[in-house]
Amino acid sequence: MEKLKFIVIAACFFTLPFGCKRDSTLSDRNPIEVSLKIVTVSRDPTDVVSSGGNFIFSLELFNASEQRWLVSHGSIVTSGFTKLYRKLSNGADSLVGSAHNLATCSFQSGVVIEPKQRLRYDIPWVADPSLTATPSCNIQPEANSPLPVGRYFTKMDGFIEALKGEEAVRIPMTGHNVDFEVK
Image 1 (cartoon, helix red, strand yellow):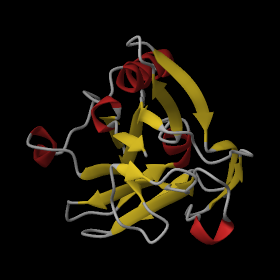
Image 2: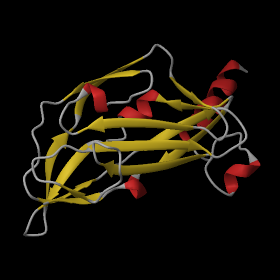
Image 3: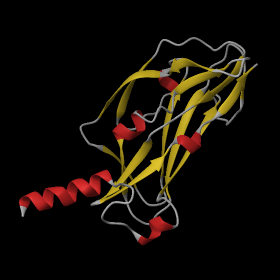
Image 4: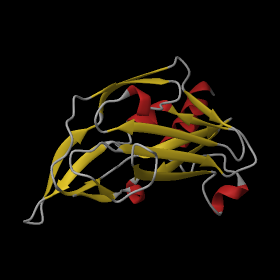
């Protein structure tokens, strides 16, 4: 019996987001809405960054449901939302780097988002603690310099995981990439 229980639990884990338990509202949409933007140091969304200037990767999560959800620290940190690529003139892509190289999060497995509330992670390209907002996590920034003129983009993969009781939802990050230009 214990062996059968283990197999069922393992099957649920490996079949997420189709898992063993599903809320009826999830068939219509994810309970957590994800938005990634490039914003200026004054927090205005932009697709053009001034040459020599700094900018911020701003990842926002909105709990669109009527229930509390726990968003996994690990899935946010490993989503690659601060990983930056440059578009080369020959059509190829070149990895520039990331805005951070290490994240140490609280002992808790994630951050709770109350119904209809937002959670925002802001990480600047050029390290600046006054521009950084990482709930329950301490981010070690990379020693980045302002970017040269050119076209850039994020190329995320993976997912952000939200948990409620026995239910887990994986929100794919591939559709949340951002293009911008440094002029």
